[in-house]
Image (cartoon, rainbow, N blue to C red; front, side, top):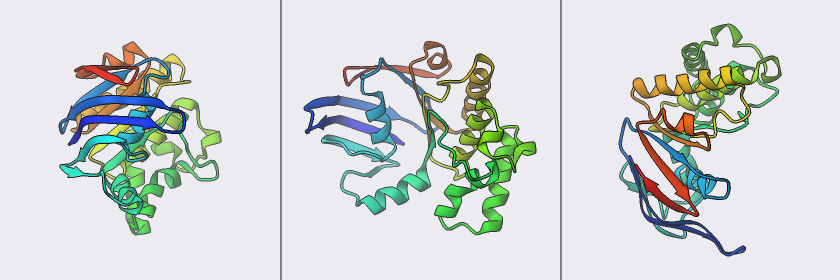
Length: 219
C-alpha cells in the first residue's frame, strides 16, 4: 500500500538531510508506529507519506503508483481520495459545526450534499459524537475535537490513516479515548501509520519503528 525505497529528503536552503535512504513498506491492514525525538525527521516523513512534500531522491509508491512525477493537482486529488489525516492540534475550522467539519473533505471531492452529510453523521456516530453534530469546535472539549478530527480522517474511506502526534496536548482520559479509537479503526480494517513521541502510544501498534537523524529502523 505504502512503499518507500531508498527515500531521501534534503532541504537545499538549509542543507539539512531530513530523511536518509529510508525503506518502508506498509501493507493493507497494518498498524505501524514511528517514534523519534524532535528533529528526527518525523514531520518530514509524515509530509512525504501524505503527499504534502516530495522526495529529493528515491521512490514512493502509493497503492502501487509511483507518485514521484505527478503534478501538484494530481497529488492533491490522490491525497484527498486515498489519505486520511489526524493532525496534532485538530485543525478544525472554527466557524463550522462538527458535522460540517467532517463533511468538508467530501465537499472538496464533489460528493452531493445529502450523501456527504449522511456519511459525516455516520462517521461522527462511530466516534461517539452523535449528540454533538451541531456543536462548533469551541463548544467541544479537546478530546471531543480530536474525535471529530478522527471522524473527518475516515469519512472519505481512505486507503491509509496518517496520525501525527494525535494525543499531543490531551489529558490522560482523552488520550486513552483517542488511542482506543485508532485501535478500533485498525480492528475494522483500516491501515494506520502513527507518528508519536509517546512510547506508550507507539506500543499499541502491531509494528514499531524508530526514526533517528533521518534514519528509519525497526519494524
